[in-house]
Structures are given as structure tokens and as C-alpha cells.
Image (cartoon, rainbow, N blue to C red; front, side, top):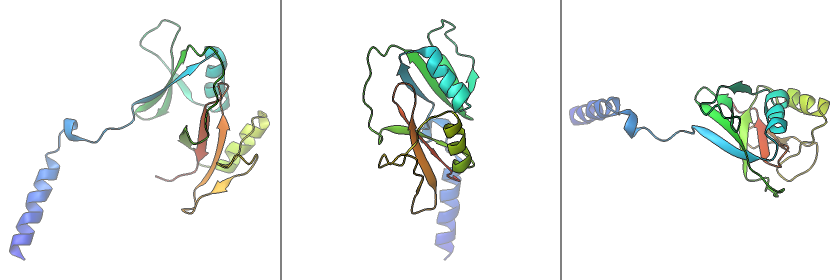
Length: 149
């Protein structure tokens, strides 16, 4: 028993010595290439409600939005023609109420669906999380859920 206790103390001391270089990677930002920078900016700022933040390039070709405490969305121009995007290739945002968010989307006449592309349907996953999907002006899929992580 004493050996086990010594081993646990040793393990705890090792864990407390982890440096930043040894931490697991975390998402820093997501970049989407868009056709119309202002139209996409209005969607992410006005429709979804993301906070636009200063971008370091100051060249009018990049827009940055806050997704979380340390995560950003970057929009850059450059899409020449429409691309089809699969619903399973998406990024997800967490909200406090999926029902309230659905009401917001309906008020802006934005269609949403479940992962089977059934329009107006909210999915409740086996873990109780509610989720919907919708597309931005360039057809990128966005999931919104009420995860409590």
C-alpha cells in the first residue's frame, strides 16, 4: 500500500510539471474562404451574433470574429464559384437554447434542418443534446447545439 501511495505522489508531481509545449493542441481559428466578404460578415455578425474583432493585417481582405475565449473565425475572399458542401463537414456553435436560436433563424427566413437534411427538424441526440444545421451564404454548414461541455 505504501508503494502505491508513493507512486501516486510521483505521478501527481509529474502531472504538475507539464509545460505549455506538452499540452494537447487546441483550436485557434477556423478560416472560411467566401465570395462576398461583407455579405458573409453581415451573416456571422448580424444573423449569428458573433463579435467582430480587430484583425492584424488591416488590409480589408480579412475579417476576424470571436468564437470563444481563445478561438476565432477568419473570413477571407476568394471563392470563384459555388461549391457543394456536405452537411457532415461543418463547425459547431454552442448556444443556451436551440429553440430560441431556431426562432431567430425563422425570423431571418433562414432554413435549418437535422443531420438527415429534414427541414425544420431539431435532433435530440442520445445524450440529450439538441442540434440543428444551416448554411451560411457560401453554403458552409454550421451546427448549433445546446451542449453543456
